Amino acid sequence: KNEVEQSPQNLTAQEGEFITINCSYSVGISALHWLQQHPGGGIVSLFMLSSGKKKHGRLIATINIQEKHSSLHITASHPRDSAVYICAITGNQFYFGTGTSLTVIP
Amino acid sequence: DGGITQSPKYLFRKEGQNVTLSCEQNLNHDAMYWYRQDPGQGLRLIYYSQIVNDFQKGDIAEGYSVSREKKESFPLTVTSAQKNPTAFYLCASSITGASSPLHFGNGTRLTVT
Image 1: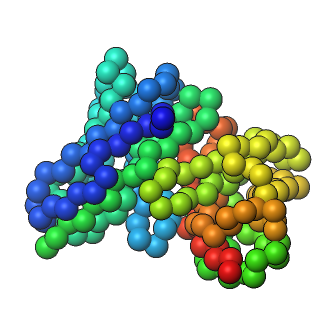
Image 2: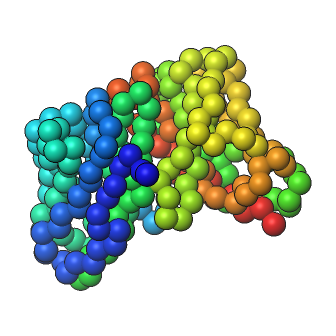
Image 3: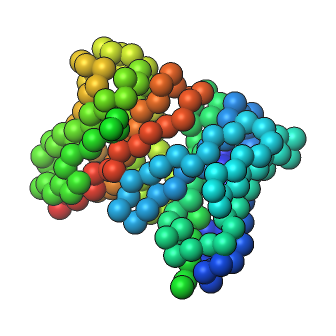
């Protein structure tokens, strides 16, 4: 069983749509990370959060510690948002979800 | 600009040959990591190092070796003992370990035939 589960696995959206990606985890954590992986393979860190909500531009990340659940929202989606979004948690080490592949169609 | 450099981006080897993947960082980070990424799976930890001259096995260390002789460098050798070496390999670093954000390189795609 994976410590981190993401849904959906794949997501296709029209440009401008509001997007939500979900992450559930099963172990105690010190922080949760949202990462973005573009087709070239490199990964960038979008958010690191341990409570509440963070916002950066059109991206919003929330976490509910009691429910062991986090969401990543993208408002006014754009084709350049097309990427794989990965949820990761940290306790004594990093655990990674399998990723959500997002395609935004113009 | 600071960052992590992995080279080469693509690597092709014949079965039975050892191959070394390079990872260099100029972020002054203490912790460095090697991950393997396969389709449909999350990143899996191969080795990590919290400090120079020390490193620990991750979940899938068999068939791999590393060294950490300098803070900036953490090369990974894929040996002939690794049964299924074809994969995408990612190097990462963080300031102090699992409590700080990870910074990733752009990865090396290794194909062994």
